[in-house]
Length: 596
Image (cartoon, rainbow, N blue to C red):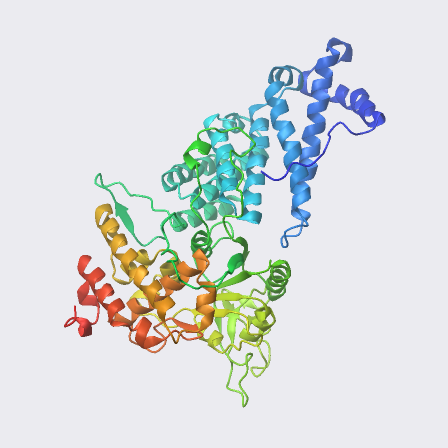
């Protein structure tokens, strides 16, 4: 939970309190309970109602103020969040302790309790977004789960007030997002079904103008759930849910005597600006996957989810478990640069900034005489005026640079500190044209720019390159055209991958020609795993028969040594072993079969 700040709700002057007692309560008593005479209500009960009204009003003021806080930086918003949590803690406990009086004298309804619980769930979710600590995501789930289990919104449908039903629908949408992030896919499917029924009832009862918007919400979440290209079935033919967050033992350990950098991944900007990609709640499927690839598996989830209704987390992380992340859905250039600058400014010593760009490619209009970092194009940032149906409208002279493009040169100022870049785009290779001007560790991992025709149809469900970085075995199965697998075989394949990854790690550490930047980043578990998965992706696609065109393979800056790494006979042998285990060896080049 955020730090507790000294904040007394009873610190207002007596005049304010007197006003509340003398004026507001008469209105409240008459409107909510039908009691016309103040004298009919005992003083202690009057005080309970006025205190509750004050807390409720103050909580709403603070909650509404959250939207005005800066979305970037670490320090500007923490004290405000602390005050907001403090008031909601008091409000939640107060309504629990005085429920009978509030029911009788205030006319407290269950949907009002649900609204408070929903606001607390939103608080925890937004605090998770700002801190990246999954313990707060667990707490958001705890409150959302309590609302459903205790049927706080059950009576809303009986009231002739469409705005109350909308509160219920929004609660469902937020609950689904949290469940998606916690990989509770079975519950997501149940919630989607319930939301569909609620939307149908809502649109039937009220002739509203937002019917299409809510139907679009349903379509988006359904597409999001179906985006994973693989079903893993257990012995009962039930789909098994696989977590893709970093787990204990999930990354090859540093062995004794290894000399690596002491850098730590502290901040990550995750940018999504791909046309027509599956998304839900301003989170594209690529952003969702990279988000989870940069988080550790939450601890004590079973314990926390079983005790809904408590506002205080069971455990505070002793230290930051996950890198802090900014999620930027279709940002403008100025927004992206503002977040980059804020993150760069606050980056701690010996820390790394990661920039992940999943975006449509922008290509240069023509070749210039002197090619520099602004002459190769880059990736598209958002503009509200120049895009029609996903296509760029060319209003400027073709010789001019695209003003909404993030060029490699735009990132040069940020290479003053350790920088790790991942570009998943049709023009990712523009970022090969980097210059390390300041001698700080710098690595760019770049996606293929061309995919086989059979793969192009799947781009809406997320990029293959990001899929490899998120779940390398799922990426391997996807290029092999496999859509389902038995859990036992999945586990055997994962065991082979662990050996594969161990060998990749040994190659990175023992290479005498690899750029030192890779070794500087290797000490951080998240970056180590991303680099190892990248090499696995490179080796797999180079052997795959369908990936033959120029541009079909990932690239990097600085380049990785080909002969002793991405084209290593040992790593190719591992790929063929995995293909044989899955009975898809016919899809891979047999140039290694003699050695195999």
